[in-house]
Length: 150
Image 1 (cartoon, rainbow, N blue to C red):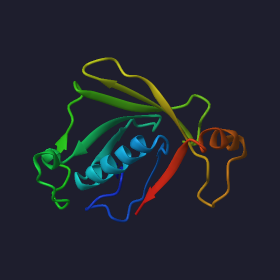
Image 2 (image 1 turned 90 degrees about the vertical axis):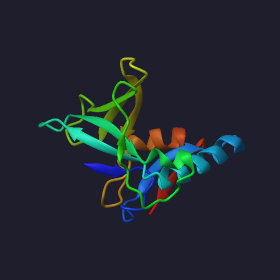
Image 3 (image 1 turned 30 degrees about the vertical axis):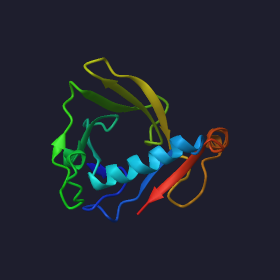
């Protein structure tokens, strides 16, 4: 499965949803620039799930020519970062049976991947909030901004 993290030329209908810092201003501004650069490069994740869907390798794909001033968003993500440079995966939490809690792991420069962060479903498809996740949302939302792209 492929996912355009910030939207992209070939996956216009996908929505990228993530949180990034809103303070300090320089960090927020930097993320805005990086987000647009990543969108131009068609930055995307390719997930390789195990048969039981409890673990997935995450391979990062993009068009690195944007760094050579070749900023054409119509060039697809053709380059996959080698695992020796960046290794990422996610595992479904032991208490999760329905895919609402994943643990992300990341390692760079040949290092073993270490725990990076938790991915939690807060809202269900029908728009209702999962009650036990409300505390997590309130804890992080003042310092983070939920971003949605179309």
